[in-house]
Image (spheres, rainbow, N blue to C red):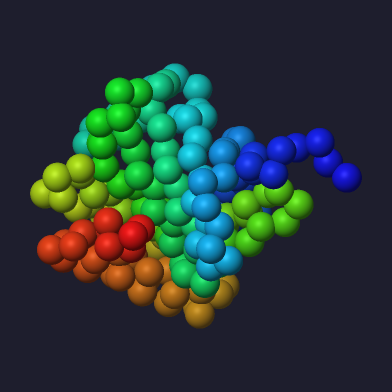
Length: 164
């Protein structure tokens, strides 16, 4: 028995078998296939990528799928202004004992709020990870997921269509 409220979850992102980050999140919705949570920027300080800054006060509405190889995170500043979407290519999410478990597969996509900038990220890290050799099926799923996100982001409906 836990004293954790049912609307509180912990998101745990792993990479190469190690925990990359853990943070509390508020459950927004769970359809059985997609789970949506909301959480403040959880890393210490500011992370400036050049194309976007994540900083204290930012709020992430994160969408994880149990049957898709990615997660989509809508990022807003403290005033509620949309910064854009940060997409992680991951294995499908699982939820166990109030914890959303996500395995990062290196590939990412950034989409600016107005959709004019779509950036594929960390393809070099993905190539260096060796996943194509150690788990070719997962590597193929990861590449397909990035391509799917990229195509959707560049479409007229944009990423919002995935989140409706």
